[in-house]
Length: 156
Image 1 (tube, helix red, strand yellow):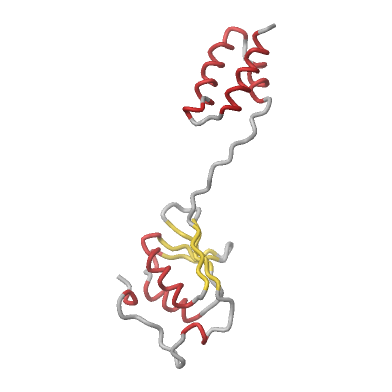
Image 2: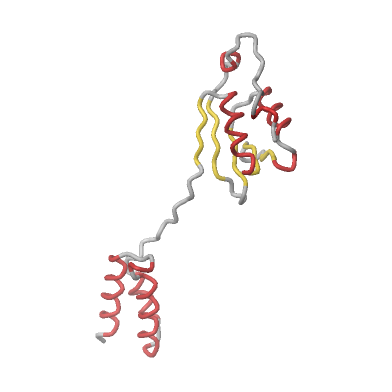
């Protein structure tokens, strides 16, 4: 457990830690591309780096020179937030899951059903109908588009 949790406080001559640092004061924590890790982005602050390295073991932190971020094991997330707030006046934590984007399906059903052999059209339609049904994660618009495409394909 890091030592700053209970009685740790940075020592400064003025008593106000932020007043001794004149650089940018915004730090951020974002989701990492590595599961179980977070990205820490801060301006250069030697005292912060020393404390981070002192309190987070080397196997739980790594510097990414390409992205210029520290990757920290998320078991240290609460500790990092405390530490960042001691050194930087603006700490942004954005760990929202990326919402999956749905590609527009306009005319996709028509195109799929065009290339399906006549003997399989009904099976493909039923599988797609299940996949885009609003009760299974699809939308009403997708469901209607599929029905229109199926009717178009079967009227031949």
